[in-house]
Image (cartoon, rainbow, N blue to C red; front, side):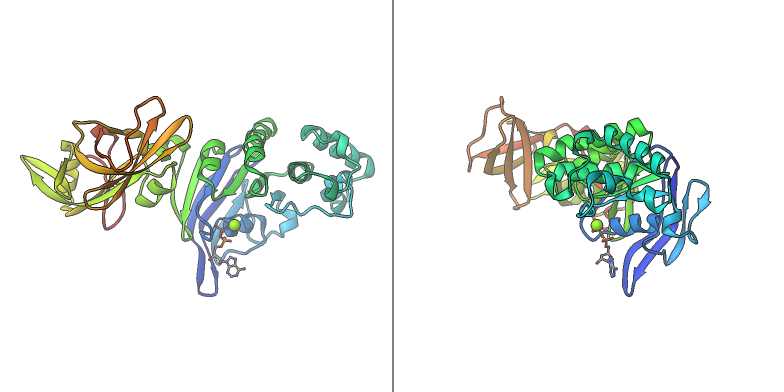
Length: 363
Ligand SMILES: Nc1ncnc2c1ncn2[C@@H]1O[C@H](COP(=O)(O)OP(=O)(O)O)[C@@H](O)[C@H]1O
Ligand SMILES: [Mg+2]
């Protein structure tokens, strides 16, 4: 297996910049997830590793080799797509063997490797079927078997689970991670689904508009989103973000939300003061808000969503900004239309510059 490195890679399609100055390394044997909304450049980045697109600028390395001049077939990476792209007229066995055939691997070796790959994915009993005779999940496993059969340096997966129904997706998610650990494989996995990214990735690289926003282990990205985009993209329900001007409050500073004042803890007040910021965005995750009579912010409950194990209480602040509170089902539910007060531990606050949208670290 091998690491995969982007060095200042830009890809333009005419006027569209699909990927902008991307520098990124997937470590050897790492499960790296490229995460972002549709159109942010994930597939283009992956296709450049495979050699299906050429970078407009910059360079890509696989292992220690710069591959910019290397043909796709000589890059020794395997790609798995959302549409499994199996050959419909070929049996499962023939589909799995196909990459070996094109590489002129002898018959005996081919059958041995294909059987091993089929065994790894639990496909032994399906080898003589045609793709049309398989379920979506089985087809997906055939596509994976075909990818692992030739022992590539890295696996490139482009939303490989998105054609599966929700339940199968969750199951296959775990199976894919198991497989990656067993093969000690380098995997670069593209998805727009932040739950997939959080649960599968050793690290997550979040992209928006062709630009890498942040890269890190799931928990650290969750705990310290580097900017508002990441803060709002990671986590369900999304982080609450409330905007207000910075005002003096006693010796320190506060954020004004309608008639209320949210005092900034001293280290944040110092950072905000030092930077001369006049407005900030406060971020609080729904699980870090509670309904409490001593809460700082008055709000009206507009909708209560019950999910069985938990509850989402959707509130409007005095100025109309929407905030979601996540409650355990065991807590008492507020009535829709009732007035409540929202409380949080101030150490759960995230703070962002309203103009640059970058995270503000306490001074
Ligand atoms: N072959 C192409 N020609 C022109 N524009 C393209 C081409 N491929 C992708 N794009 C554009 O590049 C941007 C990124 O696309 P893509 O990498 O497919 O995003 P994602 O996989 O994150 O949804 C989009 O604006 C898309 O329309
Ligand atoms: Mg895509």
